[in-house]
Image (cartoon, rainbow, N blue to C red):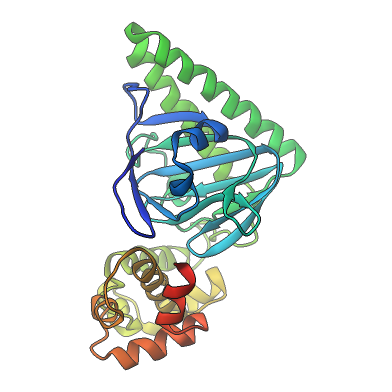
Length: 299
């Protein structure tokens, strides 16, 4: 990983220090802590790659996109590119926790293109899961095998291509395991009426949230009526299309307030608000804080 940011949130780009010829790195949480300066480890960071962490022992609290997640044996965390995190820590000091955990760091183009894993990778799935004992055993074996093959990749340069291909398939298998985990917030099966509409809206929202929050505009782009769009979103998530659009804009506002020095008015303009007062009212309604209060709390 390469640290590119400054001030409060650090941008971290994928960079494998082992120089292994693959878009994946497998390491322990202790190894990650030793790599980062303590001042960096305590600060929020924004990744441009995927990070999957399986906790085997210890306790701590992670922050991902301003939501805290307890970490304990059996916790599985998945961070997607662009998300802001603070490493699992203990206490108010922000000191990194003592965890027995394995991390998989991989670029967006490294996993094999499998339809079953699309929803796991595209950012709509949950960040944290608590695995049942039998599920934990299966994931523990999977990451152990990935770690063993990764050590082989480092040691045998002449077998790098074959081992890299095997790592890609092993990662694909692990992602399929993640896709089939039970989850009350899971997106509906693609065969469910309205599921295709909801997914199309979420993908268009990711492309266009900075320019519009209008359900009518999204409906027109996708070829559905606003009512159909809202009904599909309610069935899939319990939230309307308007609520999902507002939540996505509020999340981006939080990210910009936390990891840039842009004035509040400029953050609002970047998200389509022509008046700073309108942005302030929107942000307070969505988060319960003013933009200034939120920024001060993060720093």
